[in-house]
Image 1: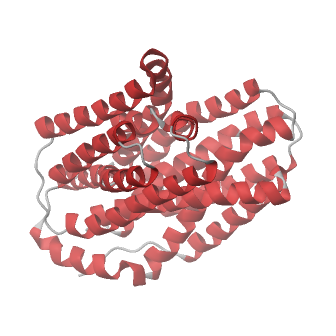
Image 2: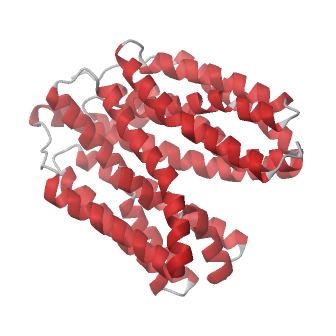
Length: 377
């Protein structure tokens, strides 16, 4: 997962620059490009999820996804027509998007097979490795870009995914679906959208993911334009949150045996409410820096324990559970990126946080009304 995080994040800060400055896309065209390619991943994930829980070997799904991601990043150097590139990236990255939920599903099945009582901690540890990759990746991307330009950056990213595929082929064991669970998995896969106990938490998670992405997009602008802070203040806010997120995620994972994931999600919403109240009334940058302890805890719960929350809801369908979580993250990111910009443009940066506060409170109410349940035969 560390390499997956690096592979995802290594080009993230520079993709918009490459597409607009080098490739010549307008800002609007780039927005459409990212939205279509992201939604293609949601569609492919949904199609693969049910089948992966019905007997397909996850090892080969993950390998195929990694190879597809490698082709997707290489496409930026091969295709020079906007529409052809859009089709190629949507196809390859859409197929590649299945990698992360299937890795989580494989880990969940491995934890179930081992009889471990620390499954939540194991999943949180796996998620923390992804977060660590997101910290390391941009730095590596900066070094590669300075040394070899965009060609080296995209080829290097493709090489990372090829390396992951090779490691999985050599070291990951084949894992077949447990035959006694296939009937339960199949029935769950066809009915989960009709199940209020799954559908409503998914809506809440989409809102929580959206709020998190709004915060990441708007806060730097809020610090500079509203609070008259400096780029150094922005860097401190980002680094303090990122530095606290991983250890908090591990601690919360260890608490998974004593506190249910549902209870942690309720507490996470409460923490989010306090955080956005502070941001809404803040007048100095240091207040935002201090509040990052709350934000890091909120992110650790939503990103870390949120994954275990859905695997608790669907214990016999790990592929479907992790795909629901992954798709919720993708849709939330799209909603957050679009919604945050629109609200900031028409209402101002500070009012964005009042909207975020209302969204978190709404998510809190949804989760409060929803109680997790286990699948039945």
